[in-house]
Image 1: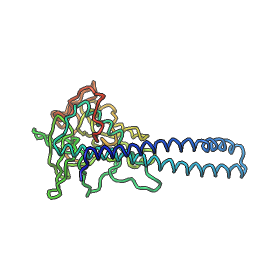
Image 2: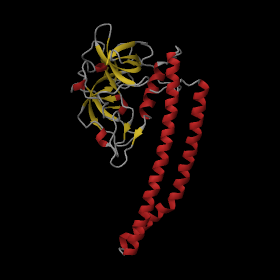
Image 3: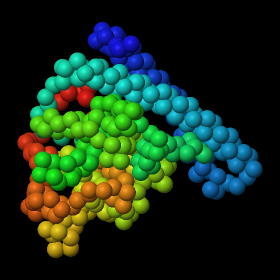
Image 4: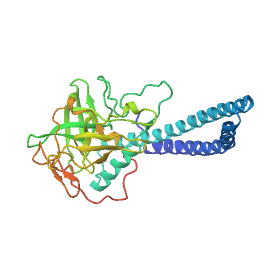
Length: 328
């Protein structure tokens, strides 16, 4: 049964209280761990000069305690992250209910661009445990062939314009009709307000989680991979080459967009989030490059920005206010 506004608010408040308690507990535990960490540092220095069995035994004991402390802290952090994701899911459910009831609000382009950026930066981070396999839709790991994107999920959608040109755009799933094996998706660009009915082969689900480069580097696209990437400050995907991989959880891919308006055929290096980078173009039809493949694709050498498919890159200054409950 759909949540009422009051029920959703109460659930969010409940999880916020639990989150606050977890954050306080994490801080308390960290303070408790500090003496042992300091002892480990001191004993490690001592062991470099004193190789006696007694010193080594004491150092091993401190390491075992430190490992248990780290595992306990990890468990608390994972619980806190789960509460944050619960809050996002509740607010997303309420937003979808409002949209289905005809209460969808128009979001200015500047706010939309900022929300897209924040959403990509705060996408849940997957950090595997020893021996754990990276799940589908984490980083570069594609969805299973049988996977059906849920309402509210972000996807890359291959749509045809009135002029007959095909472009990959950022879209939001409205529903999936199993009897026809087709999706209904909304163009994420509020100024377009277009709804498209597309077959599964014209839909590519975007990552639901970021991969941690420090623990799950295998879930990142290798350097030199040709991908489809969301061009910065637009809602269109273009061919690009992975130039540098993120080194930490907070970094982005550095990519080179294919662009014949530059002498070497590529744009200067630009940064694109994991969520905005999807499968290699070999498995995607209708892909195109900046400055080519579409009469409306124009690259600006000065600003390193583009006007891609109509209405998908009209820009205005970023604004500070935005809808916190939008799940982009």
